[in-house]
Length: 224
Image 1 (cartoon, rainbow, N blue to C red):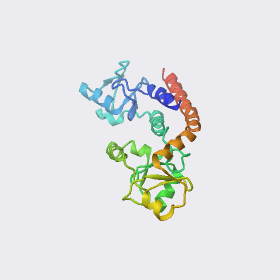
Image 2: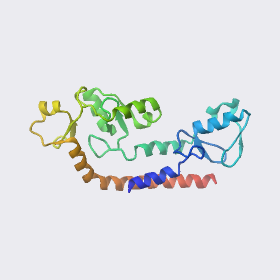
Image 3: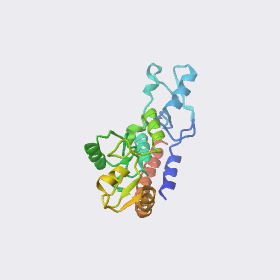
Image 4: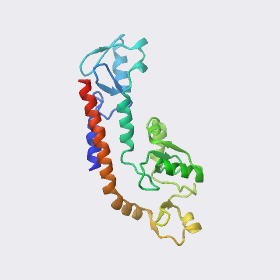
């Protein structure tokens, strides 16, 4: 299953210092990677003009003792951004990858639906990659996600799903323009959609994540 492959990929991206998935990965000369804050603290505690790799002990130097000069593991950070989005699907079309998130209605959406939603509803969307770089914004969004605001009525929570126009809505939307649609309670619609789309979605994600795993393994081999 895709979740298993996600976990397998995560296990190859563990920081040797904190034992968590790498966060803002930095790579030393010997090829070992660490979270930026982990290697920053390790370097600064020595109070020397050099550092030693916590894994192999190889000496490294930083210009002006500035940890911002620690080399970024660009490929790995890109994979981590993709990994964080890997199992999110667009809440509107149910087929695109949820690479964007609306700060108003807290829904994941693809780029196409994001443009359409902003045009009609005036919502503010950001990429998941950007959200992952802003801990405060991410925390606020996660805390508020327990209730999802209707894209058309900011003072109403979504409560149902129209089978006709394939969109989530609140009771006000239903009364205004969707009375004659085939409408389902939201949690029932989610269950039905998941049962219909999950097998195809997982197959697609499995193939994508297998490619990422192979890239990580190739990168590690080149570093040896």
